[in-house]
Image 1 (cartoon, rainbow, N blue to C red):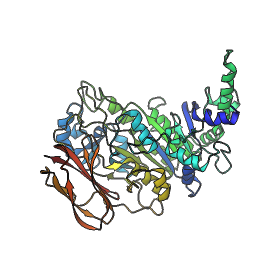
Image 2: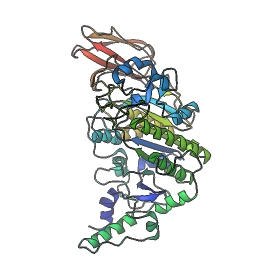
Image 3: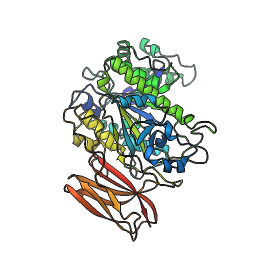
Image 4: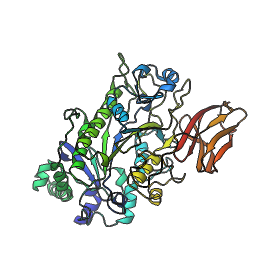
Length: 529
């Protein structure tokens, strides 16, 4: 194996911790679709910060459906947040009381909430669900490569030779406190660049390589360390950017008290220091709350989940304050996501089990500061398998952010985010007018949407709504989130519509009828008798 082949097939697929501010940093290599976003087809200084909530976050205890509290209390009285303690965003929707920082951001037009984000036919495995989110695949399609790696392999088959360059001196994506994601896995070679050291960052800068043990494999270990060191091509760039700026916000907690805040602190410093990186990935774990989501005694507003939500709120609020003080607040948009939500009904361990859809946050001075979609409609007596029905496919949120924030053309989006269902509808999560050409915000809900009769008898009903003259999807999901009927999937003329709904083949029980036209979406529970 020659040195170049070793770099391409071994070192590039391995990330070791480079230290900055005491935290490990891994840098993703050059990706052509990201190049389009950051310095190729479209010149932009915009930054996207992704925060992954590992484990599956309980959205019903984070974004509180105030109009659904009787059903919510029936389903989870021993873990639910008291309605009176909700931080009200609107008369219908509130936040967990631990999230005062995000409540303040919402009040100051720097936070948007997207309700019930998921995908059809959800998978409840942590590993598979994470693969779906990172590969942006349909749930019944396994794609071993990531969306960035696939595009990169076709456009730049010679990677990593020639990068960084004068034109592209900085890493285009940085993962803090993590490893190279499946997003950058190509069909045969991992496109992520290993930019890390097994010892300290300063040893790396000085060119020191740790002495290998005097063992039969010692010389191989020395070679590996030398190869890793040679891949640290972005090290001086990162350190130079960090040296040009210092964090200014007093809202950050002490180092080590909030790992997400520690990560976002570094992001703010690097952005303000002039690094041209466009995508940052941070993460916070611990959201797999099967047991003891709340304490066995005392208030349900405290405990494991409350602590995690408080960390998100504290970290994002401090970050937004910091980028404002540093003068780069208009360059940054952030988004939270988790691989899935939790079930509606609590389990016997004062926790919640793996579920389907859940809300996510978008934050920054450029986001549309509103609640997208409606509160999930909960059954009066939820069963152990009942899930929050999807309103928005997560890939629609990805596509809309890429379209507005980075001006990615639709043809590129279609190739980047393939689906058997076709192109994803636009969701105005970025504030209209922030970027030239942004599509004006549409009404949030599908006007006049109703299903009658409900309950559905003899297998026939009607879906009524007001179309705007676009492509309309009407889907029926069961309580686990599986698509059981595709009623309509085509363009309709503007005006009042009545579409026949035939469910003769469905077993009696509860379902959700989902309708979407462009950025408008509505969902309604239906009963089949």
